[in-house]
Amino acid sequence: MSPLVVENVAKSYRQGARDVTALAGVSLDVPAGRFLAIMGASGSGKSTLLHLMAGLAVADGGRVLVNGTDLATLSDRALTVFRRRQIGLVFQSFNLIPSLTARQNVALPLLLDGKSDDARVESLLNQLGLAARADHRPDALSGGEQQRIAIGHALVADPAVIFADEPTGNLDSANSDIVCELLHDLSSRGGKTIVMVTHEPAVAAFADEVVVIKDGLILDRFEATARDADDVARRYQAAIRGTNDQAPMTSKGPMSKSQAAT
Ligand SMILES: Nc1ncnc2c1ncn2[C@@H]1O[C@H](COP(=O)(O)OP(=O)(O)OP(=O)(O)O)[C@@H](O)[C@H]1O
Ligand SMILES: [Mg+2]
Image (cartoon, rainbow, N blue to C red; front, side, top):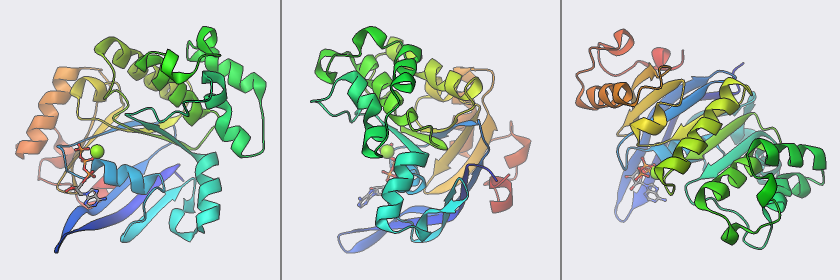
């Protein structure tokens, strides 16, 4: 079974007197080692989907299975432990602990789990190009360095899936490229399964595949293997306009649930 399976998840939010549908039934199957980008306009439901998949919010309907476990079957306490071990999270705002050094931030999920693995932490710091900065606190590090620490923090427990919500949103283009390259390598050479939300075609182009969502539904899904940002931008725009004649899979309009699950 794939490390991430999403079956027809739905979510609404109460906004004043009315209900806003953030997700209207989304299904996804993300095989091991796949790097998937989720694109969509502001308010299309990207973060909501990511939060449901990462166990940060509970769906109104449908199921999320991470490594074969239905997140809804876990108690709060069990979910906390499960997330620490099986789900890595990277946010736009880095979310590091300011009083801890880079090394301590990377090691934190192990510590919280009553474990330690100095060799793994050092090897991750090396892999992320952070060895020389390991004893610095986040406020003494650049945005790109902080985001690489956050990626180390997400990776250290060797989770089944890494989720990243606009991981390059606070980075300049040089650091954005470094982080994208890193995520790409983690998946293509390290076999990590990664799901990343972004609205930038140049960022999505580093992924293997792009899923386009609009109004809480999957509109299209296409390969992005050539790392061609212009191609991703063109196919994304075509999907949004509903004139996608490039992708045979979706030429009849929005994907059916069975297509979305393949
Ligand atoms: N906690 C919340 N309470 C009420 N409404 C919410 C909440 N979170 C999201 N929404 C609504 O759900 C819809 C989807 O929001 P979501 O944050 O998933 O969009 P997004 O695609 O991540 O957008 P952005 O690109 O701006 O981050 C929006 O209409 C939003 O206003
Ligand atoms: Mg968002």
